[in-house]
Image (cartoon, rainbow, N blue to C red; front, side, top):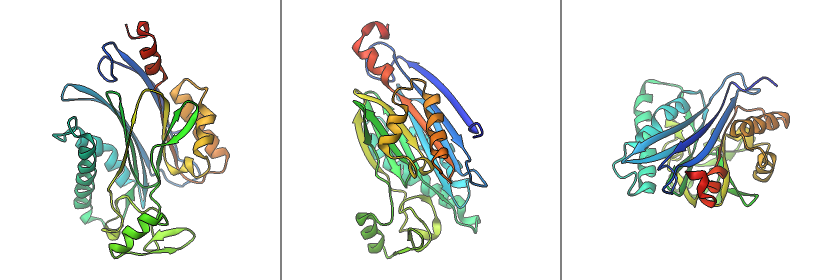
Length: 286
């Protein structure tokens, strides 16, 4: 298998990023691979920013369809819009929802000149203090490892989900079987950025789940090129003993490819075990 097109590992030490008077340390790594597709439509973003005096970490995977331009737009704009939201620190969940809506609206405005439709999923994780907030649109996914078990932090937006089907039909849309369930017979996800021809049925409204960081060993944020062939449990078990986040992300991509994934595969791993150790042993925070 060729080496992933992009791969890196970063250890972060920030005094006020994760709760505690001392420094808090975590690491993250990412890998992205075109796989068996003719073109690459996945993008990812990792970012550490200061917002109103607090350090915030952002991680996102964006799986484009109909071309890469929507996913690339999200990489360049979604977290920027979230950081600039006036209530990001005070009311983070509302800020996430409004930043997602804003980004989709601004992208659709720019899309008016394009005749060919395009769209993208977005799976994002935000670390703020002792909070982990996951926001998801589409069928990319975020999974956590806690006490050795796989904990899904997002639920895929598929047209055959009963609540999604009801929402689509109440908006005047329909789903049909065309190899898989598709909105309007076209799109295999029920929520996405872009896809102007399928608005208002396909929306960029995120579902948000919040977890306390304490007890979370690591999280995996990945496109469906991974999840189509790896269960949550298998993915967590595969990398549970790998302490280098980039090596873990690369291992996941290699395994997905070996299991026959035919899609682009992108994966971000955030290892929080160093943070947990720092809280258990104050010497590690000094």
